[in-house]
Image (cartoon, rainbow, N blue to C red):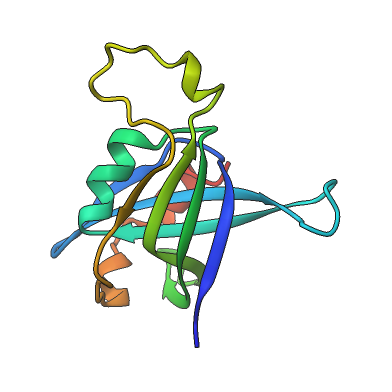
Length: 146
């Protein structure tokens, strides 16, 4: 069984990319070590299809989210002919647990603001790892390293 459940804060704003077949959004979660609160781990995540709209509208830097999905490992060859290996969590479900700051301090009249504890669950989406590959992957990675 390939299953991962993560609870963490968004490290930066999600990055939406267009592929030939389906929209894709990438983001990184910072998750505390449950055994030692002085360590954090960073997980790269990727979401497809209907998740893209939900994440781009409601999930932002600093928000606390839970993600469940599966791990994939893929590779591609960049422009310098170097093989790049990538391990990512593919999102099956995402829950917005808490907005950065607090949900109580959110403006009441903002129609684009999702309330805390909002979940977006969808049927498992099939994807082809080639959907993630683009000619400019190496440039995109260099731009978004930090």
